[in-house]
Amino acid sequence: MRIKAPIPSLLLGTPIPGSENPYLAAPAWELEALIDLSSECLVDGISDTFLSDAVREFSYRLFRGLELDDECIRLRLHSMLPPYRLGVYASLTSVIVYGAARLYGEKLSTLEVLELARLAEVLEGDSSFHAALEALRYATLEGSVAVYRNEEEHSKLPSKAVRVNVLRIKDAQARVSKDSVGSDVYGAIIHLMGVTVLEAAIRLREGMELKDTILSLKPVHDAVTLAVWGLAPSKENCLWTLDLPGSFAEACIE
Image 1 (cartoon, one colour):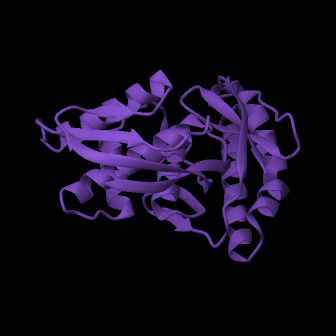
Image 2 (image 1 turned 120 degrees about the horizontal axis):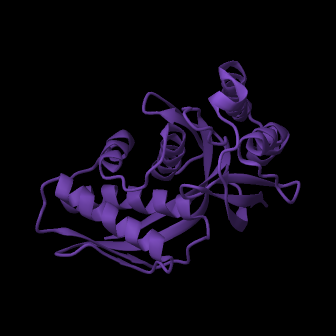
């Protein structure tokens, strides 16, 4: 079965350990893949070893969790992948769950795919990481710009996608915590980032263009990312967005 799906990017919202804030995600690239049932879990076309192994392990956990012990999925990519690994992982794992269901004659809703993906998850992270990952999966499955916080708070947004170019990937560790700055200050940082994403959603619903919305609110995103992770973008149209656990991508809006 041939599947085409968007690869999304997080464009607003930075993870703050222990929080569950919303994120704004949007389609930025596209993948095309062939998916078939197989006796082994096979992934062809991913050069990044960690990413390839993670997708293969996700497939294994999915099929074993469904008690399909003698079957798995073979995924063969027919498109170039961007260097934004979390977006690629989110898209591929969404495609695997959706495609596997279709191969068995079932058509799952977006929330059903998210639930099954959650059960098969292999990447480790706190609540802020997993909210970001699910925001990316939601944008993939809906094929739309979207705001997502959890399975009860999410929405597609009426906006066109933008072109994104990833300049570099960088490891980072959180440099503030509830203990280091106090619960009130830490809570204020979380609240500031959360309401900024919600403001973006409101502006998009009112008809503002996606790029203009992101760039107008980017100073707040940048300030929180610098405060929590010590990362500052190198260009005016770039921001740091979460990549695989422990790393960030500098993504530039074209």
